[in-house]
Length: 169
Image (tube, rainbow, N blue to C red; front, side, top):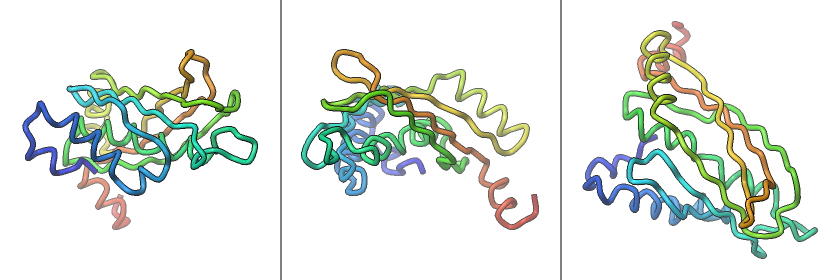
């Protein structure tokens, strides 16, 4: 899942390239979401979902599908960036709770800290696979919460995943 092009780019340009990659990737661009910041250590991504004619429902609020789609790949991508190529990562489940209608641009900050990455590595070494639950809120410019999102991300070593698919495990 880790974009291989990042390995050929000097570290100081990786965050900018990842941001541009998301923003120009057709299926992500169609969500109405825009990645507006990627931290230099590739542990944090900030997303903005625009309130526009392309992202609103008939009631004038942000469409629920756009809210979910704009946030969908972020935690899996952050984990992939930290764990490297030897790991298979999938979004396994998601739960979204709408707190209030989104009638303006909304923002979400995704972060995967070093302790979480280390815990995933330990679990992979011990069991070959693990799941992690991450939470994020979409907030307006004044900081009011409009959406609470919970994502479950599945991680496995490639060897464990291949064996599981083959029915060995």
